[in-house]
Length: 455
Image (spheres, rainbow, N blue to C red):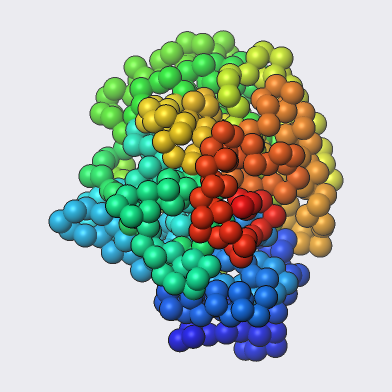
């Protein structure tokens, strides 16, 4: 390797082994390989294969189930973080370790934009490979829909370029099939679009209106003008008043936003407590959505972003919720908010539809094209001594409460080790094709994890 291999006790090891979630800080890999190039990655894969050493792959380190760390070898590509925009084609090339905030900054600097998420320190590779739900998804599609090609180290420890011309099946799998099943991705190329000015808006209601707001939002958001993306959040915590809000991004003309929001506002019987909107350049809007600026957009040691203790799981429903289901969701969040040690429990409903639904479910590995929205259940806490499993139980209880209403569907980027029949939950009818691709490129299952595609 040209990069650094950290063993336990080496200077820098205790920093190199950390993920984005401090709840996993007690995990101590045997070694962390900080790769600098695809050749470094290939050396790691060859060693792990020949010596039968289990390994995990890390880019951003945001896996909810600690899939980016483990007891043996961690192949860390975070240092391979270059971002280059081609001024002629408008395409952007990302090193596998590129963080989303750096991608946003680079493409915006070239007058371009991509549709992606809001977490600034998340790895753009994992985001893309799992689908990529974000604030411009309804207008432009998922992040994976912009994927043109990628480079990957396979089980033969060789670097292959995956594109439509020679590897159409693997390109299909890279658009929503998740990371870590077929090889180690070292670089991606994505389409970009001209960077728009956008309007950010938000509205709050009293908690007594929570069920009415969720009900109105779910009927409005997935079928609104595709240039309008929104999220509906219901959240609560001990000692603080529960809140319900709708926030979003509008990429059309600022003056048109009122007409787009009007059907939602007419449907909610109780008036808003607060309502506001503001117009921004693309990059400024993405930073506002991320809630950061400058060094506060990066985790240490590159920046000052605070790592958050987090437990999470998800649903991707096939249909809208009934009135009974909406009431059950609101009640479950309120009940969960009394959990000892909890900081905040949230159910975040993020709108789909628009350009996401315009593609057939079999057009990419991301199967939830016709879903109206995703639901992410999260619990945060501030005392590192509290066991993470205590808060896993909180979010999994929310999922269990809602499964009779929402089904078993889930989003692979919000992975949860407890989901039954996770193959079908994440990929549905597309899983069979993913298995076929897995058998062709990794028949001996070298690249494996608790919820990776099985050959």
